[in-house]
Image (tube, rainbow, N blue to C red):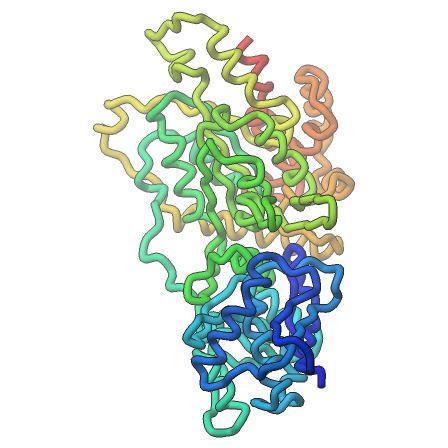
Length: 508
């Protein structure tokens, strides 16, 4: 007799169905798992054997063969424990085999028969729902799975014996309820920033249109402090964005207690991060920081300190919104629609251009340091601003600054305008930064004075084609913040002032 249990294998955020086939038959006593399993899946036979024994069941003195079909698809992870155990139990008649037909199953077993949480429950639930099946998962992951569909049948037992009792009718498992993380009581507020009015204006524009931002200034000028306050002015995730972000976090095992949050991700990796850590990869092609920041912010502090090859690996995700990881036997793609916020010092010693400072290496200090950031990467950054040092007088002088709540209201209105515009155009975009070039040329067409100014500026600044379109997107965002339908000369002038020339030319 062959029993069958459905589970899933992950390729990116997609859950592919896997048929777990278990046969208990005559032959030499053995427990064999086939179907291209990795080390964790191969070791599941020992966990299954111990868990069944702890639950009062013993494997028969027969040959147990487990096949994970399709056999040419790599199987990775510990979530195959529970489907293998249930397949064995169905094969020996411990539970009715027909009751498992309507479920996809995943979960890790402890030696005592308890179920441990696993990564990827939310995309697995979405995949099971697409197949018209329910889901069986550990109790700790039940709240996460409940977000897939309100009408989906979900069982979230604590142990193997509890699940067996449910199928026997001696115990009834209730459906888990979806849960949200509690919103943080207080986020860092813009009102705490003294001075830096130009930087705060740039931060607001960046948030309103989803534009990439680079801040350059000496140590202690407040670059990191400004970046940490960006989440306080960003709008919460919309339902579709929430599911996308949560599916990636689920695969990475970063959903605490299965709770989802509507706050946009803010990832700030250290400058020692490798290419695999930033873009994704490794043995199991896991999502990197650029994907974990999907629909949110990726903050790179001390930008030139990152390995230049690692920084250049961001060029493709910034342009396409996808992080593609290619391997010899498979290809994985993760969503990576991010807003890049970067900060850097003007030179290695940090004080180039500051009054009263003279670097011993001269202009070469700044030139060599800024050259670590390539021109093609800089071309993908819409706003580049200088953040001068704040003097003690600025800190002592009393003054009031706008709170994050006031700025967030303006940002939200600008984003609503953009979203409605793109819906009317039939474009799958939410912000101006995401809009394709062909659409931007239509919706950001300037008036006559603005068009003449743009022609002159494009020639004098030697803008690339990408740089031209990014200036148009930035000007469109500035007009949206002003509530105007037409892009004017003033908007183009401000957009070009933020764009400037590339850093290497400034240093030279």
